[in-house]
Length: 298
Image (tube, rainbow, N blue to C red):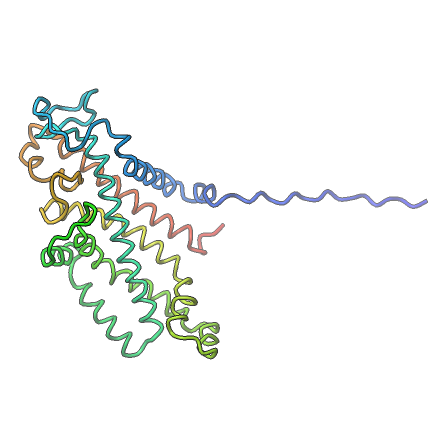
């Protein structure tokens, strides 16, 4: 009589975590920063629905009112609700920050990949041009560009301001992406693409650029914070966004500097908004770098 062999229990396959939950588990600070960024984006996109007042409405009967249930963050020297202006200012900061960072990071990535691919004299002259741009501090270079170009407004946004903020980002992204692309240039599949007769443009954009997406995304995210800070600095100096547009840097200048003793909330809450945005994007960029780095995989 044959004896049936005992069947061993089959171990269930481990459940695969979603990318969001995995990021939350491994980078809790980055996840919290992402939540702050999403709240800012929601406030900026739906600012007309979220803000309790029109940010441009002047109410001389409510000048310099302290924070209250009626005006959560008080009013400014024109009686405008500061909370509403901060909500609308988030749209200004995010539009300029995202656009400037995208343009600067994309141009820097293209220059970095091209410099690594061609090498020789082309690499030499591109890197010398990058060295010249890196010799200037970010704020100084942005000041020079925005002061030299005439003001051009499209859909309420100063195009030259975005261009001025993008220029200082280009050399920094170029250096990082070039370092990553140098190791990709010597890969066998690049040599195979050359042997197959593919053009340099095809090799750069189809074979090399996709492999530097990780450092590109990290730099793009990190420089959004830099762009927001630059926009606030230029607006504070009178070279960025102008009245009556709601902008965080603009809220810190002018009347806010005159009434900082009588109405400290005029500079306190815009300063907190700028700091929170910069910290959130910086933390998210650092967390994204650690998450995409294979050395930190568990």
